[in-house]
Image (cartoon, rainbow, N blue to C red):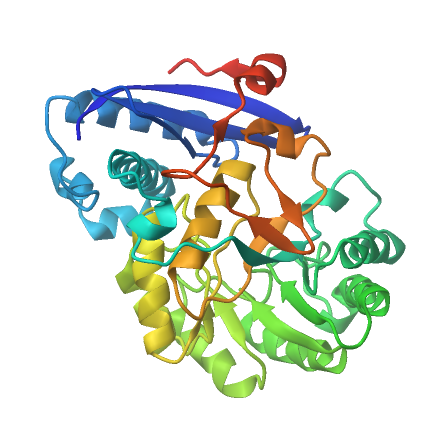
Length: 376
């Protein structure tokens, strides 16, 4: 295939969330959208994508893995520069999605999987709480809503008050409000539901061990990114040796090799590649299959918009033995309208649309009402 053009559109979902999409077209007129959201850096990602498409437009691309070499990039640069990693991930995903349309395959099939009607999701309640006072009662209310909707697995990120750069204080005192939020979620979902906690890299290693003991008492079964794994793998391994619960990491990693290192060197129990940053959908599948072969778990990271969730759903379906994929619930009520056909989430599952590639695209009417073109 050969890229012909790329355009960019931004959709403000909430005052804190703007989804940014790159819409790629090849020389045969096949079009596919890819999410490139990276907070305030999204426009710089778009510029990097546009520059790359201009460089690549004269070349035939046989495989998505050729993108890095065609652009003269090495994996070390991609591991340390999130803007470039996100741009390259988008390009690689675009190639995979366009190729699957040319081959009249679903993206799941193109990734080597067997077509699936749906995949299980877990409910990340955090983003829906940004517009609230984030009290324990607010956490419990959103968790209860997700439970009524059929979700069986839940995740929250409760430790707002904990910061590594904050003045020193006893960790249980600083993290107390977060533990109260977790307790409220547990009460709302019942003792049998699976409860996961994302720490957002907020703890020092010794404090992480103390917090893990409290999480175990609350029935938490997922200890996500207590520290920054890419910067301190030895500390991650140190924590893993002392914490008798699954340790989860990898939301910001690039390349299957990075995830293998987390499993081997960091003793990580579950990796969580994000298709926006990890090298795209094919690299997420490679990382997932390797993790499962090494007796670790695989669960795509996706606190993102519906295009990323749909791509992550195909990745999940393509990896036998994958765990539920992440979904940021209730961030905006019109979310499903952004896709054509509309995003379908029922009983805690994402239903994959029929058709080649993703099986869906951006709804031009909704984009026209709610979006704006991004100039680069």
